[in-house]
Length: 356
Image (cartoon, rainbow, N blue to C red; front, side, top):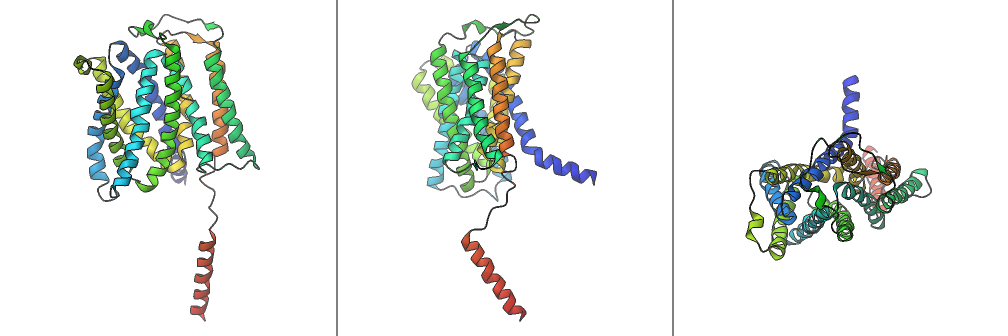
């Protein structure tokens, strides 16, 4: 009995645990890419290489494990995946990491929290998300969205007093002083990437209905994203030296991001999107915000402002109000449509005739 209960609990919270692991991966990503960019790595070259690594790693798993279940790839579906890759890699990641070079990991991690609210609003507009304002949980969804946005605005517009560091930095990130050289441009790029990211999550829900092979979809997005990013990089970066990489932090950050983030984590997000919907996946972003702020303050010696703490608390309250409001959405039985009811009535009539 105990083993059955444990298994049932694990299945129920499996998506939650996977998304927590994904956010831990994102936390490490912020700092390892910051160190790589400070070392001189071009963000667009980095994205191209990491997508190539993800393609090579995911391809064997996609080919062998989904050989029997993978749908046929039509021209229309290929074009849809191309657009999905453009939103998730070509646009989002290039703007995302370009803004990291112009701002800071803490700011970027805080702004990514807007993705959950944006995704919720778009999902409601497209009727992918249930919203019943006649019930308490429906109201909690709306209030949670508004509160989380208020928290993000607090983090962005209000700094407040600086929290004094308890000890010297345990780890130094070389060249961190170059940050915040163009904060306005970096902020605009961050907002644009968040909007693109939200649309990407929404589009995943539609694409997965027509192409439910998550491993294959991850591989295709990585491959197309690498090609799109390579074209963008060649247009913006004309020095061949930018493509050279030594066996240093640039190499390890690319391997880490390619295998874990563009490969495994994207696959996890696709699986969770299919199980729980796009809004659920984006709700866990505050966890990486907390972890990034904690590591930046306690380990890397970065400044921590009171406004960031207050804003983060508000965001977390709002997003988990939204999470509570969503709890049970997937468990509600769907009402049979009129055609289904008629079919059931005809079948019942036939059964009675056969009995007579």
